[in-house]
Length: 137
Image (cartoon, rainbow, N blue to C red; front, top):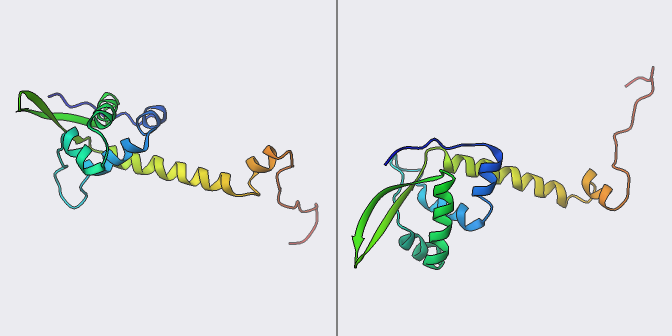
């Protein structure tokens, strides 16, 4: 297996994390208390996350294409091949950063006096009062 470099360009990160299940998959593959990342198959992840195997497999493939996770081994299982993946170094950190950015943006949009919300209602944004020239603070 060749190692690929995780690209942290904004559009790549957003595309990879566009679905909440992908973030949950990355979280499940990240074990902060150990020095070795966890390996898991889509079947194990589906059981753990309470989602169907088909849905988890699809999102695992998306994360692999975006280089957030890597196929580390394959094992024969009952006439099929089970694939095991692990998170790329930096993937969970990138996910945490982008989720914090999204949360702060959503919080700003929820603020009724934010400039974006005031413009949407046809109101002028609130600007700090200007001090007149020569006025004392």
